[in-house]
Image 1 (cartoon, rainbow, N blue to C red):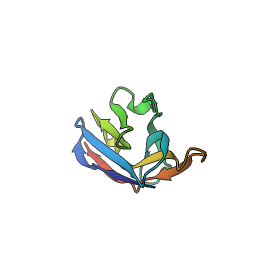
Image 2 (image 1 turned 60 degrees about the vertical axis):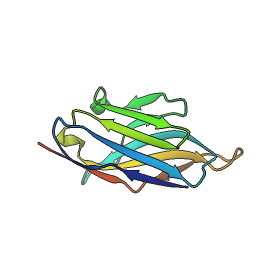
Image 3 (image 1 turned 90 degrees about the vertical axis):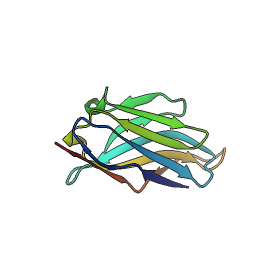
Amino acid sequence: VQLQASGGGSVQSGGSLRVFCVASGNPFAINDMAWHRQAPGRQRDVVASIDFFGRPKYADSVKGRFTISRDNTKNIVSLQMNDVRPEDTGTYFCYAAVRRSNLAAPRDYWGQGTQVTVSS
């Protein structure tokens, strides 16, 4: 199983950007999916997560601005970022808890990261 992230880039403060992540390799099932962010010199923190049933959770810093969604038929998770701020700058990593078979426990998988830069 591999996670491939895309959609990052540069945007001005107040603008919008959407990042995507697709899980390939025929996962049997994907439980939670999430986006994490890592700014230079800082630890990686969760920005938003979503369970198999589509129930989202958000970090306080992005509530009301970011929306996480997923398509279980295509194994895609996306993050719509609106009203972005310079502090949203960082590398965004997608995460998925993947089961390879019906009896297998979920394992953690990470994408390679996509850079988001917000200028003031």
